[in-house]
Image 1 (spheres, rainbow, N blue to C red):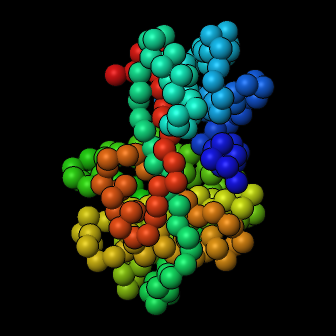
Image 2 (image 1 turned 180 degrees about the vertical axis):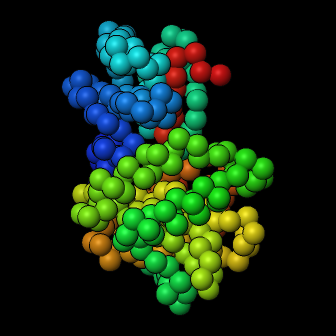
Length: 260
């Protein structure tokens, strides 16, 4: 699977989870979220250099949806002219993500009996409470802040997709106490890992690593051939995942009109 194919499949994987609608314009795929206005949830995936008319068409479509024009694309030599055009048009880089992959090999499974899959609504409540407590604004290792309204979409995604195993939530326990969480989304051979977090009180005990590698192991058992996650370049999570066996295959840019 090429990088551009991976990105397209990644968008499809997020349909009805992060994105409510994927709009194919022929030269770009516009991603739209009805509940979230952030450019992370509303942008256009581009895999080739666009003309000015095509750039304007994308911008007009996002503005019709009452969203700020934004483009998401691989940071590669072939698309540098496109990035330069966006800069000249007043777009600015909002973020740079590393798409990080794990081979699925050499995983220590000795502590996996501490991990429980969320199968009931009662367990979902435990997951959501633990997930929320893992992301505190006073946490120096957390670059993302509090979850806020993201918890609403997290609940909705499980309710829509857990019965088909398209999305799976996991809780890590320290004896009887839930201390870490992670999510695995499965689609067309991709196993996407997200929502990883551990309580500040147990940092350094390996629970975040356990949650993440359990998802890799489970993804492989599900028959996926790629096990990956996305982190923002230069952040603590990026360094953490590198240390536990993930390697950056390629990076992406999100460029937004008027972003600071």
